[in-house]
Image (cartoon, rainbow, N blue to C red; front, side, top):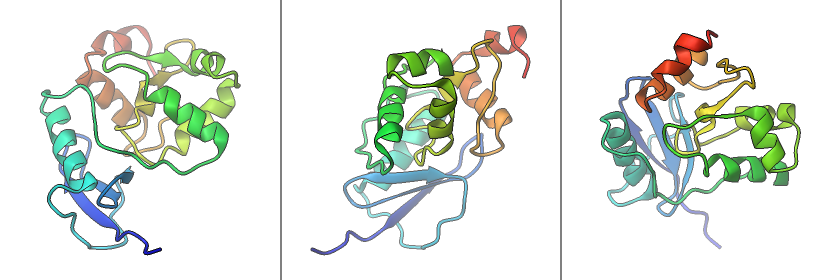
Length: 164
């Protein structure tokens, strides 16, 4: 069986230049790192579609993503990432609440969030500490990126009541 060629699309955003990596059929990563390969994404491929959807998200014209994702990780990570996909645009949830929903522990949920390979599309930025503080974001510029993403989603009042 042939391995699908890796394709990469880029999108400029308020939180930095993003690289969207995947195959023609699914996105495997969204990151702030320069891609290992320079294979441009073909028009109509999952990375190209995701890049357009991310541009729309940052322009305030999109609240959901509908590009196919391929997430590779442990069973626990898969459960956490699937639960992240259920958190609606503009809403936040605590690590503890997410842990309760999937019968896990908050720290284990935080670890899985930190290993999320598909930033923004799998919205780990929507998970906050139980006391409302912004904690634990490892992508982009860390907490500042999380703050920017949540502000984009209308969570401005979160910052006035819960400093990081």
